[in-house]
Length: 515
Image (cartoon, rainbow, N blue to C red; front, side, top):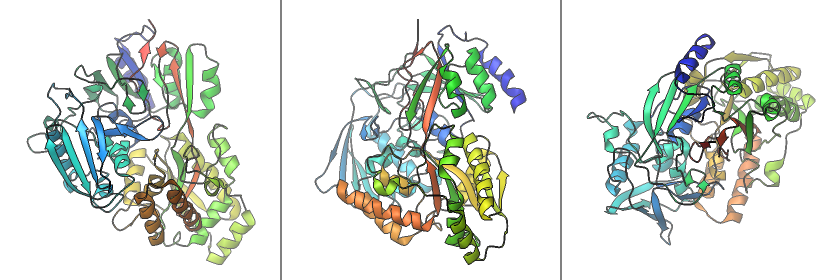
């Protein structure tokens, strides 16, 4: 791949002056996206591109709360079961057609059709956080969702980027056969060209109607200053670094931790560092004959030197965090703050009790995300000191994602994108494996606690439930959380207005070039 990246990059940029403040913002993407059909065949890169192409009724704000986006108001009934959304005035799709409640109903019907493959169907059909019992249109601008029971997570579920933000699109996005064709949406950008493996070019949507005020997460003012946005696929870190330093790209929103100091000392670059709510982790397949024994999983945990591992992986940029709830969360309290201490003798004792005989245990990882590879290498060496024989299997990211979804692994070096609600921080890996193979933690008691935490809006009650979940999580060791990171973006000095945020994804609106 490296051999063709630079020629492709040159071809893509041939008509664009690197530092001239032209009409195209060039942003590095470390791998191609998987789809333009929202919330279906997706990964982190797919989500971040789609946040520029799709908008839903609500979205996450800068402070991780949920606010209106296409809706100008959201009213909740006293019993917490009925949500009434009133659409903003003047909304149009990128083809100039008006947005109506009929479009919301059309899209919801497709999202909830099992044949669509919407990632978040299980979150709204009663298998997960919410059960939507009915959706109706009161008039052209009013949509009413009725839930089977109250849920503190309904709006957050609609807003989740991994759900495609439940983005509203025009029915012409589909072909006559009902299959996805191309996005026709309400967002600040529309699709220009997707040249697979090379770039995704987006164009300013001249029909876009922005909210007033300031940029605010995925809500707020999303006015686009630069007419074109091109995400360039540059898998190799050194190639991306060279492109940024020479001005062949304008922004690398997620630079290697080891490069931060160099970028900060380079006059032609500006950096922006923000804490994120992503987590890095190791997943266990607890149905595996060997790893079904919690003593082996605990031995692996106790073999890890958390400060050393996290310090090396992040070049000292992050601190250990063993809770699924990130430190930035208001629900990260004393139980969530405990860091597991390395204890090799205890690990060896657990392995002896389990009758572990040195059989190889495979951990899969990838080189697309360097921290995932690095944490696997370090953990392998640390585990060996306790007597665990960990073999690494390095595969491409797409294959790893497929195996994650199928639950086909023993241990996986992994990471979850941000879940801004603490219950969702547990939900993302908890559930019935027979129904959702990607789930890691299948514990009936935890499921009851999680369900209760999703229903109550009382902060003290939620905290108590989450603290109990934390204790169970640490006892079962179905997953090991390592740290919640920071994300540093580096841009050319002529780029104005770029700012990271808790979700860790780039936002091209509000960004301009210096005159």
